Length: 207
Image 1: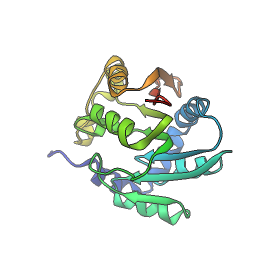
Image 2: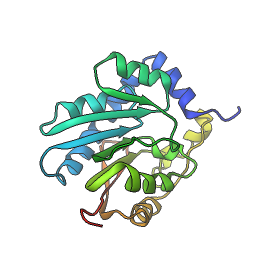
Image 3: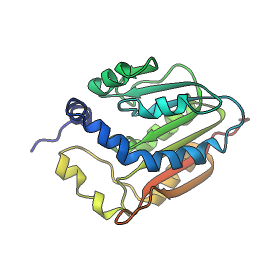
Image 4: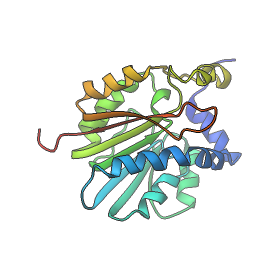
């Protein structure tokens, strides 16, 4: 089968309500990731969710004490249509990495997005340079990585490109992008699942 664009697959999933399963399936990992990231922030914060799907993380963040705004961006038109139908938040339909938000945020969150890019490590640099305020934090989670052997056949199964990197390659990518206090965590652990690989890093407050 010919390789498909990931945004096409996700639009099909949105039309079949599979986004709801993604939301429930990723919730434990995301809440753990956000708890770690928010512990690094002081006072009011703004946030953007990269690969926001139906906007569920943005809606959760909006209910978090201190959140002044939560913006979402996704390459799937159907996912963004769903996100906009479920609330009054700010959602952008855009293909990445060829888009930037035009302003910077205290928190950048991403779950199950980066590895669909041909060069995900360059996206880490773009987030550092153009998306994050000084002192801001990136937290990104991936379930497809070298050490998660169960995920290695996903690209073939879905006929979608996925960049397969090791935990160390992701960590080094964060460091090379300029992030400090880089942490790599396995979150959302449960029977039969090695965990979402979460990467957390902070942009220095003064450069």
